[in-house]
Length: 240
Image (cartoon, rainbow, N blue to C red; front, side):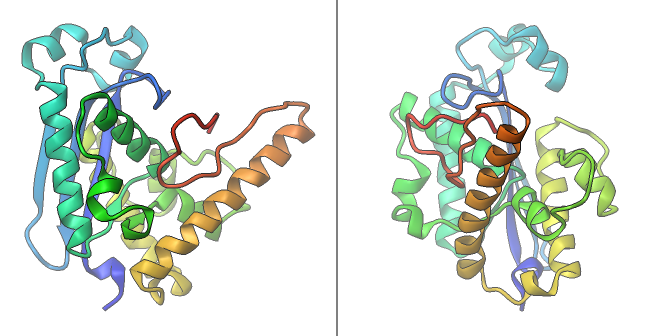
């Protein structure tokens, strides 16, 4: 059975901003879907311990006041999230995240911030990871398509239902649906086993970053683009 027909652990976070080194998780979701089994949905509202900027709250709808009143302790939430993801990966179920480089890197930094064992540590290092990133896959197999590559735009392109942008469970499930759809329409993808697919995404993401840097240079922009995937090493510089 191809990976896209099996169980998938769809993962998404909402945050205080877009810098995984300094921003914090305010909401997270893991939806276990597929394999003709009932879905299992987990969600966390987190008090990040810092102010949630108005711009971020406008995107996901979670204010500082609500997070403080209703949110979980961040250390406890990060422990639960990381533990559940590790359990799935160790059981052969891949984490599916759209632009996993962001979601998994910020989770990694939150783990370090709160003294929680990281996902990498729990699965035996990078070689133990299993991740499927529809953002990387779409850019690899439809690289010349014009237009945005946001989750909403990609869902629209692949005719995937997507009703609530920036609601963590909705975003997670949409990412899993896109991954499934790519497995259906791209023969090369569905013929790969998960371990090979994971390794190829590391190479594809690095190449995509290099091409984006080259494009920036052609526009007169001397910007670096992080090529590491799915978790950016501590201290690396990244603009995308």
